[in-house]
Length: 132
Image (cartoon, rainbow, N blue to C red):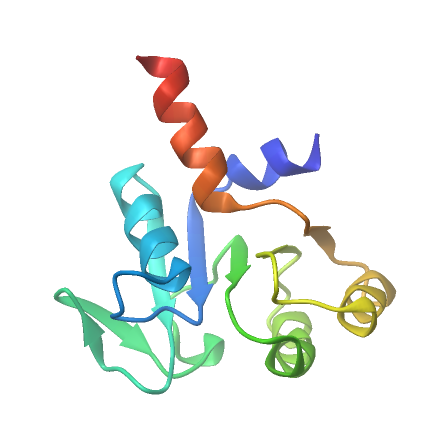
């Protein structure tokens, strides 16, 4: 399943990371780190969150990521797809509420491997429950 293929990638960027602990941009970022993923936060509003460096965009990351978790509104996600393609990133996970038909169509036209209608956070919590 594509979802499992994406979760097997070890280097992630969370676009839309936030310091608001109530939001999924924060929870997903922390959960990926907790599960041993090399995780980079992307949000031009922050320079760091909980001591982790945050980058203004994907181009600023110190290395190429294998997967991008999108936690921004559809209008932002639409523009983000161009940067993802430019950088040669193939795997994109759209969190619920971050995409619309236009975003999905563009991602498919660009030939990206995409997961939507699912949540990274929920999948990682599920893994924790499977282990216990």
